[in-house]
Image (cartoon, rainbow, N blue to C red; front, side, top):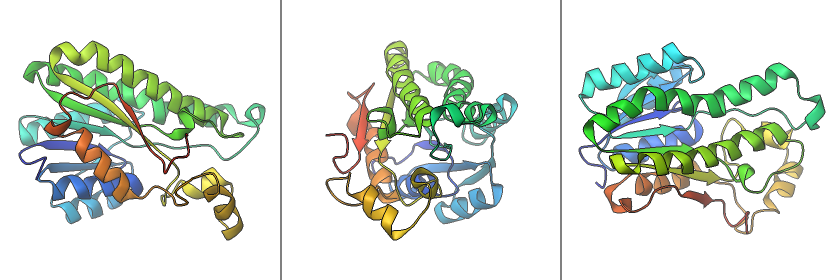
Length: 246
C-alpha cells in the first residue's frame, strides 16, 4: 500500500501501459483517474480500479484543463500525474513522414507535457508537494532507424523531465521518467511496421532479456517512482527495457 491516500491522474489509461499503471496504483492504495481519448476504454479501466473515468485529448488545452479541474474538484488535491498517452508514426524514412503526422506526434508526445504542466503545476506548488511521471522511451536514448520523429519526441520528453525536476525541486515536486522498450500495447505493430512472428523475433533479438516490456513492468516501476520511497529521486529517466540500452 505504498500509495495509500494518494490521488493519481493517468493519461492514456484505457489500454497498454496506462491500464497497467492504473491497476498497480489502485493495488497500492491510490485513487485513480483513468483519462483517455477513448472514453469507453477509460471507463473500462476505471471500473477495474474503482476510480474515475475522464475523456481527454492531451494535445488540446481546454480538454487538459477540464481533466485537471475535474480531478481537483473531486479529490481536493492531486498527488501524482502520469503523462502516459503517446503515439508514433509508422516506420518511414524521415523525409517521407507527412507534416501532419509530425505535428500529431509532437502534439501528443511533447505538447501534452507542456499543457498538463501548465494546469497542474500551480496546484502542486500551492500544496508544496507532488510527483509527475513522464512515460518516455528507449527510443529517446537509443534511436531506431525510420522512427526518427518519434525518437526525437521522446528525447524531448527526457530533457523536459530533467528541466522540470530542477525547476520544481524547491517546491517539493519530483519529476521522473520511464523509458520502456516496446511492449504488448496497441503501438507495438506500429513500431515494428507489421506484427508477424518474424518481426517479433527480429525485434526481441535486440533485447538482452528477450521479452517485451509489459504493463505490469511499467506499473511496478511507476508505483515506486511516484511513492514516498523515492522521495530522494528526481530527474531520473529509468530504463525498463530488459537491457536494450546497454
